[in-house]
Length: 364
Length: 276
Image (cartoon, rainbow over all chains, first blue to last red; front, top):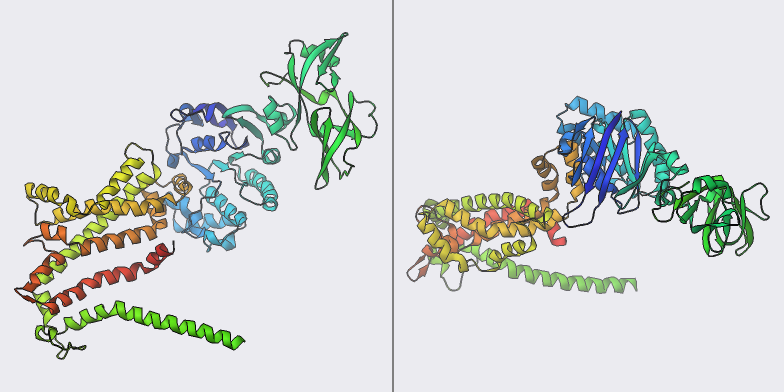
């Protein structure tokens, strides 16, 4: 049963351009939904509309089939962790976490009990007497989450909570978010510009671009079967390689002509029958194999030159030049190759994505 | 070498100290002289050479002030200043909130903000004739409402002007977090916004108080037998060719007390504003 039903939300300030354009999402109870998109895509606006901090221009929001579009934020029972944490600077950590409990008039004992629970869960029990200015970024984050969890909300909104934290804390927090959601069973809507957040935590991901939902589905489904070029390139790190090609028929063969190389896609003829002539070829970096000689048993192999190798931890992103195209290949080991070296890149036709060149929508 | 350096530093410090002593004397002497005169008999005020300590200390000036209309004048000033300042700050918080949070609203655009300030840019006397006739027409001359409302008109703009920049600095997300916690707008204003603009409120309160407490023209024109402010009472202390300096000094000493209390109570906030 969907706990949140977002139906045709439009946000358009007077005379301005549309920040959100007909956004429709159904978010399941007790699920972790990620709203993924670049800055300015409308993620924060969407969260604010769900929280009731801003009214939509058009559209309706239902919680459990109840229309809450005109309900004030106080009455929605939704919690939110803000990007800047929004801790009350004049109150101690204890009073910050107690704030939503005070609003509903909890007794002192209830409050102590609840704050003890959430602060121990988030490992901030020894910080309760401090003021926010005495906390580190990661601690402020935990306090903000504790405050959001204190009233035991069914729906918790997170607005880019990891953006202001440094890299090391970010890694640890991802696992904790996931654990927290599994243990406490909230419905979480999590806005982030970082595809790794979505891949690491989300059950479902809504990929937002210019106020429009490009794709909304399970995160693995979105990764393996991107609906649009944008969805394919945005969800995934390193980003999917995209090459503009035209579809041509030559001597009974169906070819993708990318200028500097052609790819034989005769095997996919049935699926490409009604396709437009201008298409976009997409292939994820991890499906490009690099070798000294053409690999046996692969559907396609091309000669390419290494531009640069970018070692990230124990993996390497190899930047290659194939004709006029720059490609990235993901090598799951430390690979230090001489710059300018000629190598072969090979892949299978089953690993490529073909998008319509005009609409950017998926064909295969 | 070290010692010489310490010595020159010592010299600089000495010079600075001497300078400060002279400056302090310059500032403090009039205060001392006022207090000195307030304890003198009127005949000792005019002696040549002047006496630096009252020859026969007496409370007669204070007794005279607190025994007659002087008491009413001080009480009147206290009531008008306290009521006006409090209302100005409370209304000013709401007004500056609107200007800060809804800068493109129908009533709170920059033109209106500027317009609000023009009342403070002109000297009060420029508005006084119409104000006087208005209260006369309404039969409110020599009443508290007329004085309080007139002072409010001049002081709310000042409060708004001070508080707006303070509210601008309070992140909106704090108020939104409070709404999501379950607090209403007014609860949020009281629990979150107001505590965070405490310095601004203290400064606005102090400046309003000083303006009203020291104001003469409005007080002189709008007060009368029923409602008297101490500044309007001062001219009556000149009798023919004789100025009652000891009484003027006594009322000055008494009038300084509320200002000193406000300074002491708000000193933390006022220095913070100065450092800003």
